[in-house]
Image (cartoon, rainbow, N blue to C red; front, side, top):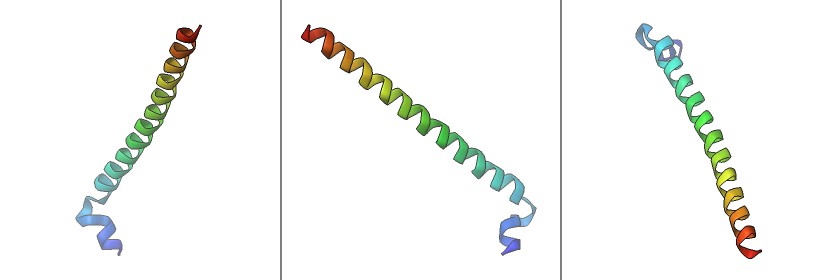
Length: 52
């Protein structure tokens, strides 16, 4: 198992790359959630202004 994790001496680079990818995906999902909330709020405000 340890040999597989070390990946022939390149394990540090491989696993740090996976870690960086996981962090980037998490950041992107958070940003997507924020942009979606902002877009919905903008549409809600536009609908409310239109109704008045």
